[in-house]
Amino acid sequence: MGNENVASGATVLTMEAQGGTAPYTYELIPDGEDNDKFVIGSSEVKVGENALTEAKTYKIYVQATDSKGETYKEGFDIPVAAE
Image 1 (tube, rainbow, N blue to C red):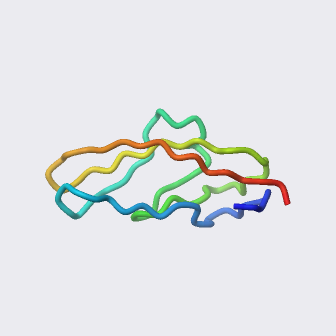
Image 2: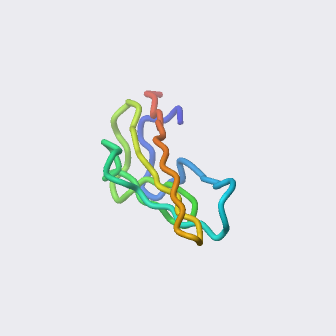
């Protein structure tokens, strides 16, 4: 990121599932310690209502589900550095 203050609504990650059967849905699942700071819109993870103001690595966990109900889970680190 390179920016300590990442604005609300900013896209921080775009996901693209591979394998399985499209279309895919994505959701934040409880395993991520910072999930409450983010939202998913379509295949993008965005900063939630409040800007990210702390320089740290935020940890989220996402589950992708294909049209047949098959799932895949993965954790992501989103680094936000001080300017």
